Image 1: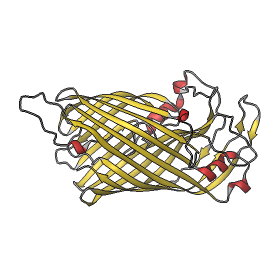
Image 2 (image 1 turned 90 degrees about the vertical axis):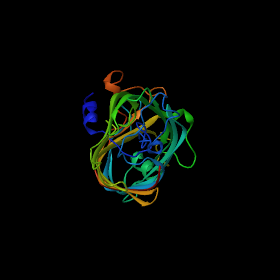
Image 3 (image 1 turned 135 degrees about the vertical axis):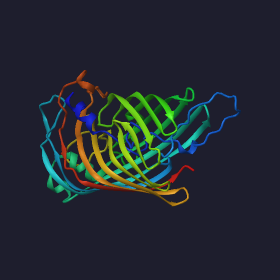
Image 4 (image 1 turned 180 degrees about the vertical axis):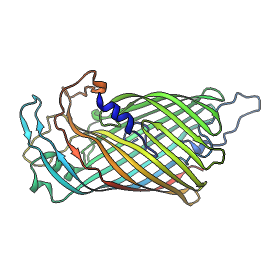
Length: 369
């Protein structure tokens, strides 16, 4: 599909909770807690390390806040399942801010020279503040649902690094996310979204690693199967480097010193959110099986530095570019692939548009030694 070409030029991310899920969720950890792994004996088989010199430290625990400035939300006509009956007319409304908390943690389960295994979890909450209150300004239920409930993601993830020898490795990451407009009560587990990636890589030197693989991802809102490229490097002076997992993220790194780093690049965020709770707006959408397909690119600058020992602060600012915020209808309650235009070409239930605001994000992190 034409969107896939745009997708391939947009993607990327750094420091989110998983590689190809939300995240935020959902990112590839750099495993710095496993630096300087030793060997049992001099004659033992040697395995490559999960990291290279100069990479940014891995975040074990992260607590952050994300804020976007005001922008317009253009909600299109909402059609019924037969494609003809209009459930709600199109309307536009203005947000004054979009904001929410982001939390995540990653813990090592196994740390051996021949296997590294991590488990993690994340929670992202996004609130939409409208001006004025959309309940009095527009009958479109999308505005009212976002204003009253927002969107959120809660998920778990796992990462396995399996060195094959001193140069080659396999990397696997999987995640499961529950995303929607739910409140204090979670949605049924039937709505879990699964993402995964498998990469074959090489570590030719202590300052470079690269890999090729494939991923199942929701980072543009709907499920896609795409090739991925891993590339991490540091120059001879440990001043410049790259941290790339294309198309999920790509950044250039400038190391002022080991405790101060600046990044420039981009990230892709996205997920599919079930419209679970609906406001008392006169529209009963509970049996419509609707999901918001959200995908966006974030062009950004990031400054990360140590406050004290292993406590780091990350500050980022940039421009959020909307790629998709359309509402899709599940067929017989099940998701039908639109990937590459192979299996589905019917229209969305609602085609929407978002303005592109500046954004700001700050997080306090406990990093690996």
